[in-house]
Image (cartoon, rainbow, N blue to C red; front, side, top):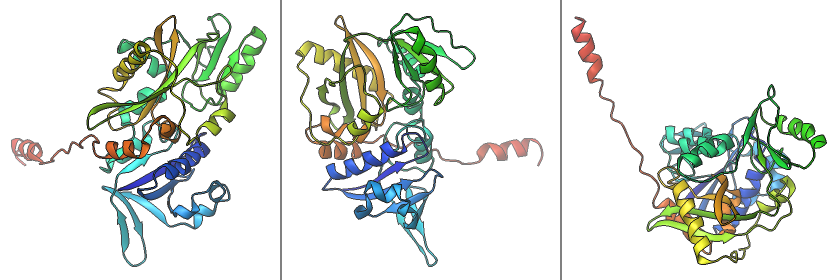
Length: 344
């Protein structure tokens, strides 16, 4: 089975995307893979499998690779004499801005390219943490209370301890747990370095957190195991960077069937009717038996491969059941009618 992995992009999570692409490559040994790297200037390069190593990108060696361009249905490599076209489905593995904010989804949809990943509307609602909370509440899913701050309005009303997050950034970049008032201003300064919108949430001591990934395949919703991440206060950037390179399967959380069913039902409420075509991961809090959505990961690190018994089978299942593209036939009937009415 053929698949193009699109990775890189111009965002704070550029390096994370490279790590994810290398990891996913290792988990898809039976696939015929095409590697399309998007650099910080939005140029596309065709990378050989043998060059899929971190140093190749950090040293800038990718600039010697052939350049590609989007075309209807895929990519094209133009040469002096002719060109080579690549028409195959794409795995959108660009994290953060460009990949998860809807930009790349818009390009892929514009060119009519089949792809695994969230569509534009799903990207917008899951990339911005404010919109994620509005969306979840609209679907009857509980979220923690929060305040939205701007550089001109930094007055925090929530009681301490709290957690400060840039609204449109992942991988725990710019995130701080604040336990005393003296640390609050510094935490806000850090967050505003990355985004002009910041959210503040209560920090719940000892909260139970569970991760669940899934997608819609041939037989309906397919769920991964439920993972209970082992961490201190939260996963900082360094820990998450290492987390993105995970390939070993993890143990399923020791929870009862009732809680697992509640997590799955909440996941389905978030997923259905919006995320078809994507494999996503939802991170949940469980407080006094109630399930709260913490975050939606529309393009999870390394595609959450470690949560699935058969990740390669999951990707094949997704490719076979991507949303159908809706094509609109343009006929120019009304233009002629208007001209005729005006006597032209």
